[in-house]
Length: 429
Image (cartoon, rainbow, N blue to C red; front, top):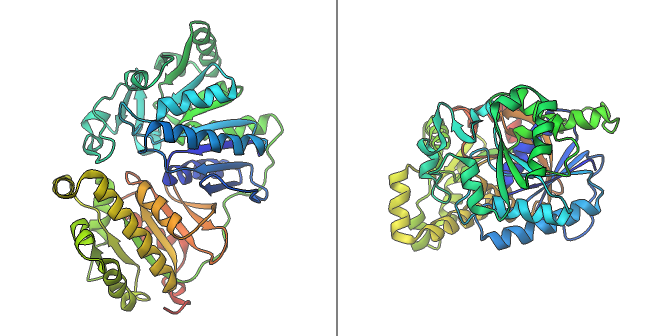
């Protein structure tokens, strides 16, 4: 193992794995900290996917340290803490505390923080995070039901979470390349800065940052920062030229489960809602009707085998606020996640073998309910979202999509990439 990674949600893990795989690192994602030895085969990178983004900081720290211990025992030469490219974290959130705890455990005094992902229009300038052409605080993330992002200045957001000093490596330094970045890193360490937010507007910036940070024991950021890491290992003669990202062929029925309420997922759901092959889940109905999940599966059974079915709880901000007012924010999330997990189990029992899941929390609930221990990473569908193959039986093709990622036609396009319509239905319901 060359690179040992900790991701704070499941879709973030596959996003990072996708980046590493495209750069030639055979990558495996483990879903949760393994309780025993796991055979990861010829993997160059192993990512432990946690479900720690929205839990109490103390619990996130504990889980992350357990993941670090497992990866360190596996011989990882460098470690990576992956969080969302929109820096999803409240003032009481987890990014700062987890980063500092990992630094302490590794006996290190410095790391960087760079969630930039220019391919998906997440960029950082003078410490401010932009989504497209607008500041983070002006984007749809200001309405996020769990981590509303109302402050775009990452140095300020991170400092509110950290005990140590937070600094900045600004655009003019990054633009001059890796040597300039290394020089500023040395100065910041001398000045007592523990974590430095790094500006990045392009993939070239991310490659320069990655090269400059080759000797750091810990990096933190989105998946974009990992672009340059495989080449570091290659230059050191540690990474072979093996092919990465090849998955076996899959057959079986196809389904989409969408729990995210992001603007991107709302558009994707609207694009796929044709005919009668979709079912909308109402969280209030889930509370009031114990048979609600059974009714969803009863609806789905006769429709499997015709085209991918869509089951979603995705809604606009006004609808989400109404449900939260009636049930409470945490209760709504719990109901949706529990239902999606049970629905996924039912669908797999009916022969679904190709499953797209939208939303980090939803993805976590689904893979947990299905008892999946790990994923091997395959072909990219859209930036940040690959197909994956589950380890174990039955073999499943899974695309775990961050709510914010993917083009409007992502759901339909994903199945077209994986195989032809005729292949969907070789497993009877």
